[in-house]
Length: 350
Image (tube, rainbow, N blue to C red; front, side, top):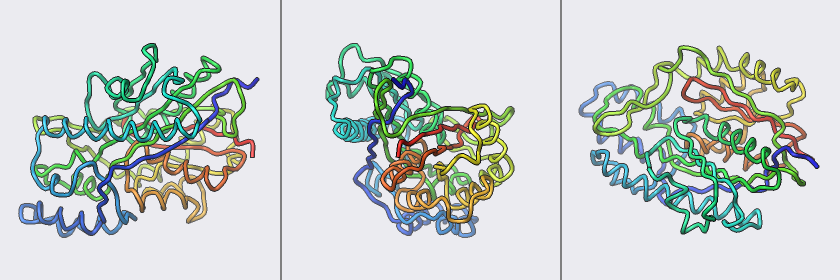
């Protein structure tokens, strides 16, 4: 019997409102250009992201008005519950399971606050058992998809035969700000979209794709690189350093360090599956990981079709990699607030 966790199923979901990148640029120009002289110079960011379109939980008109905490929170609860249910139900159906078969739910989200947390709020509609274990995780940001998978896999491995449901869900668009006329806010407006991914994991029986090892690296004194500020209007994005530069300088050594602790030689990794922060981040990852230009093809396709959805984005990439056939060993990577690199090694029976 193999007690490592296996991926039983994976599913993704996006909200109903699709926005083309040029449409978002014109909306941002209408809101900011008159008050922010640097806007036109920075507007080239929208064309350089590699994004064609992305999705939001609200129609475009909603984002054109200033919103405070109550409105943002109400929009978060409505949109997040809808996406949670859609992604989770799809993953359960693909696993041939019912919600009552789930023993543990891991919910990863950093773009809204809910107490009770999301899995409790949807429990009745989903059909979770009253004794289901709940593991809500907040604050991992873009690293949440990989770190969440790591947490869920270890929980599954600790109780072989139990079913663990991971839901990584982010509504990044709800943090759009009209008052913060900064480059960081323009970058956020040019990149982020909404989406969710769900995975069912189980240990103790067969599985084509298994979690071989997990690892993380937290850099000291880097809390200023990425995160949220909090004020009466809502969350405000923090980007204090350019992520592509950080990736080029530090990601290669970090992945090598994590892989060594996993006891996995990097030359035995057949494919990297990375969180695509944007076109420049993808190019920086290829350079840092010594990959040929264009190697991260699924990453480019996902960022083009969905934008950066934070935590679930890498799981959208994994979905495409699974559909095209995983090689013997893959390594998932993501960077997020902390500043943290998270890795999960996957083994395929194929």
